[in-house]
Length: 394
Image 1 (tube, rainbow, N blue to C red):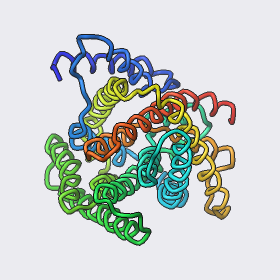
Image 2 (cartoon, rainbow, N blue to C red):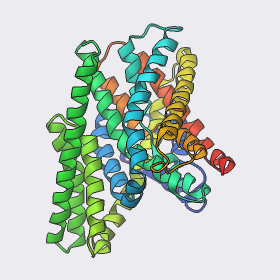
Image 3 (spheres, rainbow, N blue to C red):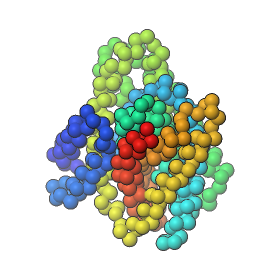
Image 4 (cartoon, rainbow, N blue to C red):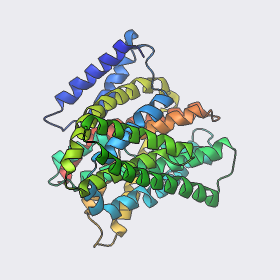
């Protein structure tokens, strides 16, 4: 990318984030993505691209760490049962049900193997709270729903990546789907990533005490955000879950010491600048990149996949929450419906799409086109629908 192009993208991001600073009722990511679509038709921005390497290895670790580090540990503890259930058991159930329905729907239009349908399903199950959490907090009397949506997204980013990577391995190695093989690989990658993240997060929370220079503490947090991600990936376990676990562990440890503000101050200032900077670039480039994936011949099945993903998520989330014992259930039926609708697709889904494209899987063009169009429908329709739905349910 040309440096001038990057500066202009950041300027656009600055304008959008500033415009929404006071109201916080319109979703910034789809607005940025919409502008990115317009930029795709301007000759000056020719050559822009969102590569799998840049998104997965440079941008994603920072965004994961920021989300985990800034998430309220108190909110996580309060809603742990609901968040844990939605981001693990319910998510696996969604992948299987949605995959089966996509396989059935695709059979009406095109030929698609069952594992390919599961791959699309895995791509469309992670959620992105950036679009909606501030809106939920603004439109509701309490922050409970926003906290659950954000916490679920934080964990299911890692879970969905592990599911996707396991399925992609089966596809590229031409293996048949086996519950036993899938479960073993899933447990190894997910538990290993979580464990290494917790250990490294605890170590860094202790190492930060050895310096009182705030700039060095920031340097250490950068090393942790990226180092743990790459370390876990080197061992063949989930770098996504490792980074999330490390960020949560660091936040929890800071909450237990008396001088919490002293250690948080410099980190907060630095990462609060990094977050909107990266988000501006990511969603502008998502919009720009999406233009090349639009295939009008696949529009009807793509719309069908989006509708099915919304129906499946709503059914599973509402059903799961209704089965939780009343003593551990922290949300009402109306709130569970809002949590379902707030499951917007975003950055992690795009990461998985680009990883799928880089794998060279047969029939990749059709898979990526279907998934990308369904993803963009979710980003626009659900993001803009959250505020009026929240107000109506309230």
